Length: 322
Image (tube, rainbow, N blue to C red; front, side, top):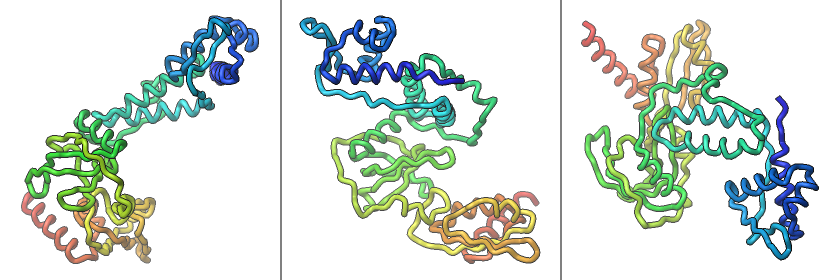
């Protein structure tokens, strides 16, 4: 399918002619671009509606001009670019309770007139080409999500009532929001907690109440968000470091070797086809869950603490099924 760029070209042409200060009118523009004057009028209406172009008509000069400084940033999109946008919208619509899907769709609709209907992608038909299954997704409070976004972009302090899962307690916090992070379908807020004086990760589904304060903050230069998750085996973070060594059976090793599980990992292959997977992480809770899913195919060699925790889990499971 050949892409029609005539609309984009006309808009760019009209913008340049008006910006030149020559006061062109519909007839002049239509003659120069060889289209009907009504087409030019539709283009001008589009510029005014979607790009807030300050186009005015001067009856004395009998032509259009910009009432204030304005420039149209023209760009080129291919049909494959539109396909990428459509796929992105399809992926994001699975994250229920967030505004991203709606915004991508609006952006897609805004761009569509540039191509005069020549590019037409039905989002529902994408299932026949590409399918995403991201697993279980927790819904988040849309109002809270919007407030967090506003706090992020405007650097305003948030006040939240937060339920701490492992303690079973609720506490009031004031935080400086730094990042929204999605991990395996769940949304998290990375923020500097003024109560504990440090970076913390808050699960959005555990926020019981949230409000946006009028207090502003300056980004702390000594904070490194990327470093926070550098040694994490997931979303949990801690100040400790653990050297983990796991042994996988020859059977399971085939799949383990195919992926990069952690930035610090190293793999040693044994003569019998088994492997040792070693890495350094800052929390054992998530790696414990990961190890358990492999059952007899994975053995914890170290640290001793993780090995003991796995043994305790196995003993409890054994009681359940005996």
